[in-house]
Length: 259
Ligand SMILES: [Cu+2]
Image (tube, rainbow, N blue to C red):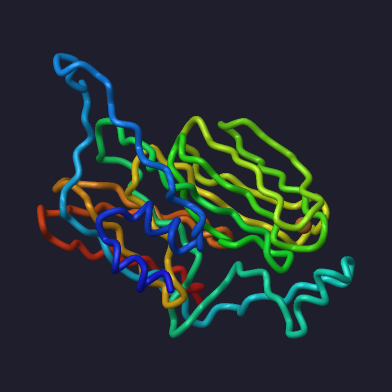
């Protein structure tokens, strides 16, 4: 899913993540035109380009994902006639999903948050998406799609913590984050198995690996970047990538267990 969406929208990786998250209720907002006087030229307009960083997160011969027991809430259990899993270690063909990949350094200037809203959904007593990214100042819609109580509890270190119950199906609330932070954990105070992780970025150059481990970050200006890949079980790793204008730089990470 993510691979397809990301490849369709290489220019704005941040938007691609939002779309991949099923944020179908985004949009609808027209960015307000700037009323700045012509003489007030922006001091640090952030650059974009057509460079791409693409690669794969590998995970071979590791432990599989673990099943969740939802018996504490019969409503949750009833929505999962088959087993539900933590979504921590999602693999397909040697690739690792749910890895947050982002440009850690090498950019300059200030990037504006998109008008599109990001969505964190509580569906089947799990967070969807499990891992995602959002920009500073971008609106996050947190929705309860389940006919049971959820209590979303964000546990950032740099941003403001919040903790809010959503007792009824289809309830929504909106939040945003003030500063960049990798990663902001979310948990549910009702269902201890629920977890989600969100990278808050001050630029749009991030992606989440798809089921096959692939990722693509587009729209980059030419330059030398530090790229980091973060995974909730395996930690963070970084490497340096040089991106040429119009070029695609390959960057691969391997989170396979060492023997
Ligand atoms: Cu919950």
